[in-house]
Amino acid sequence: MGPGAIFMPEFDTNILDLMRQRGALGQRIRTRLATGDPTRWLEVSAKAGGEFVDKRTIAGSVGSTTRVEKYTPLKALFSKASFGLFDVEVNNQQGNFPNLVAGELQDRIEDILVMEDEKLWTGKVATAPLEYDGLLTLITGSFAIAKGESIVDGIRTKVASMVANKAYRIRPTAIYLDAILLDLLEQEVKNAANTMKDVAAREVEVVPGLVVRGLSTAAGILPLIPESYLEASVSGADTLYKCAIVTENLIEYHYVTTPKPRMFKLGLVENLAGVYVVIKFGSPVVRGAGIAHSIGTVTR
Image (cartoon, rainbow, N blue to C red; front, side):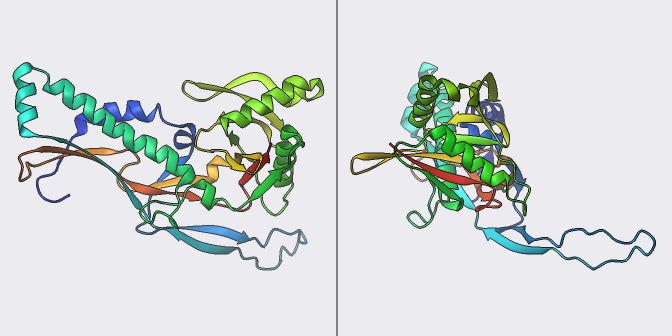
């Protein structure tokens, strides 16, 4: 951002308040300092396992774990507000400028958080190189529920197959789904008395202010979290709804300096405008992309 950029920590409280109002996924996943650019991590692809040995000789084979290095480039999220000299002086004269600045800068912070909530799901480097890949691209596991098949049964069966994988200890933690698909699931439960037991009557607060119901699965009761960015698509006469079964402790956000947006005030530019910049550096990381998570398509 060049010389003359001043960090504005007085907006940190506003930023933290807004972050608590963001989408559920961004609040529930882990944040970690990036290892560099690109940020790197190791994933276990094979384990040697343990063995029983003679209790007196205590000698056995030497085991080794196969680890694969993976990496992803970091990206910059950016928003800017500019106040012309005339507008600043007129509003100062009327005593309105502090309120004007506060409202405008809050909008810029919200712009970044809303964009991030969306791109955590839908980001796609192939079509927009400056973005990062979102979960719909990073997650390679998938399943489908055909027209006429039970939504509840299809999701529960997929979770059971993930838990049954003996090579990895997978325990999904949440189900994100299109809000209309959630409504269809609840209608299915309401209209079929024998499936009522599959949806827990007890409500769960997944993030402050968001209370949802849970689905009984082989991994326990998983919260059903509505997500507006899992948008449906149309194929002929059919509508294809999206859902995501995820293991949230294996999803991370790697960041530089801080996981929250930061605000800077720049020095006056040539046209004497006052410029404020909100910026954040980071990228999402999905471990076990084909094993610990799965994107579902429900046809209706």
